[in-house]
Image (tube, rainbow, N blue to C red):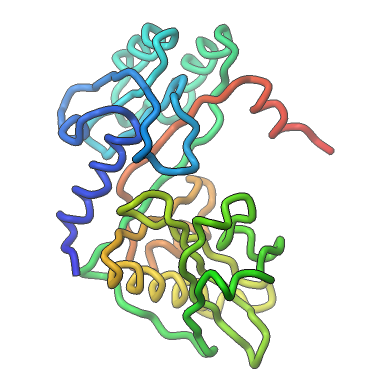
Length: 258
């Protein structure tokens, strides 16, 4: 099994591919800005090139931008300390500048990597089964929308299901988002929560992914305390953060109340 240093190295290498940067950029003390471009090796759900994408592994900010957003992004990342560039009130400054160019801040998330010194397959009081793509056919339903993605079925490669008799009550699935890293998503039916099912499924799937020579990773919004707690219980630790800008009309569509 890979060690923590090897896992982090793979994650930084993938982030560099996504951003059009160099892996060593994430270890520098000074902030770095690069030009975003398409790359076949990038995570498959990303829409490249970015207009403005900020990533930090804790040391600095690496910004990947389209040419028209270089100046405002460079000014922003050099105006405040790294610890505050991903939070308000400073983010209002960036968003105001982006809006003048038809963009808004859209996604902000924290990403987790496994700590091999803490990761172990946890138990729960229900039967657990390893699932494969053929088993997912009838599972593209709202209750499993975090574990599986109907829009990208071809990426769903492995899962662990928890069963109460023959009823599926919890599901962890992973998508092959890039060649070296598979992302974990988790769903548990409301009636069965707070029984350790989520952490059992997440931890066991992470072990399965590592056994296949890939790096499992986990994403959560900062405000999703339940998801962050599950990541930590399952043996994951915070690794990097991302902020993504999108066209104003796209953001407004997401905010539309129907």
